[in-house]
Length: 544
Image (cartoon, one colour):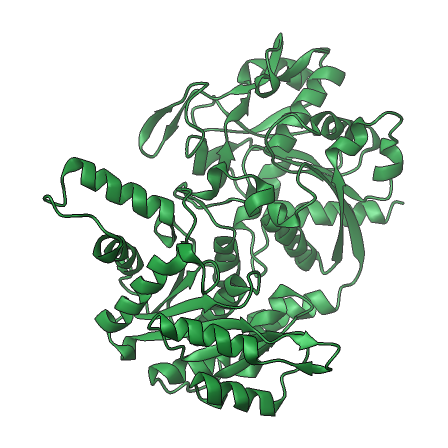
């Protein structure tokens, strides 16, 4: 029978529940167990797809086209298990489903209430599609005490009774703050958080205590006494120098053993953590370093580029180099008398990531021009590919008015809104002015690579599948003009209608992709495009 681990957080947000869940899953996986992680988000949006990156960070996209919380990226990067639509649920989606059923009359005249209808829907989500799994880890978003998370707390309370205590464990992540004036750690916030949790009918089995100072043995004993857990189940969690050190750190503190003991399972031999030891060896002992300039739109909140950041780190691991990322706002290059060269000359490579809207895009186009003319490795992702095509159209193909219809009417729509495409479900059609949520080209789509292209060499083949999230495409009708200007279309959709990859054969490394390769990169399996890009940056560093 599949066992469930419910993960909650207390005292404050941003303690790292997602990283803890991913690390625990990785440790269980290293012991030979089959795992899956799910995220319960209490907000009323159906999904994060319409949220500003400054509100929510990046939107993580799964193979099956779900727009999800960025924590699902941690789950995939740490376990290698592909996330899917059924691994992220929001209050909005729960209520949307329930109201649709009520309108159809599915409840046979009953009064629809939070209990049992909302809690039943949450429990149904938690228990769906778990065949063949040993453990399902369910992370509850938010903090204990939040009004919006109460239905989820009630649902997991009920699940503990439905499944039996032998098949469920509650892990609570909390904060033990250090008060400098007193010169000591304080356990009271943890005690209060656990009290709030138990008042909801949930007694935690394991406590994970975030702290900036080592947790003394006496404080562990005190927390155990007041929170009604074994001392061995009070797990210190100090800040780590790298997120990839967290699984090893949690193992040293006994997290995986404490969870198995809570299930009544003998932990047995130590897990095989050689994969994580090798990752940290590459992090701790680089053989060089490179600087990558990222010219973006949301650099004020780096969580907006979480997967991108990690994929660049993975590319560094593949080459045993440290990657220094220089975050640059695209608008900087649009200011009067801005010096693009002064900002970009220290960079060994340039990357323009995805984004929406016109702000900062002229600065991105100037960055593309700098990379093209100076022969600096360039990587354009989604919007970054579109800006590369517009720059090429303006400066090498003679189309000075080239632009995108995303920014308004243009006589040279090198980039335009995609109105129809083929998906696994058949023909998809969209129109301007329609709903924004869930209407982009989302999820994994195949592409065919030209046999003599740079990217086919990087991938080691001609057929790929990558994840997409975009509403605008490079207009294939401009292909001939752009190729005359030196920009080769080296990757296309199977029907030949949608450009997927462009490159410059006369450039040391110049690639633009319409998809998001960062979403599939992992520390133990770096994405080939990022590995090759950082290798090119390393070569560039040796030239300057």
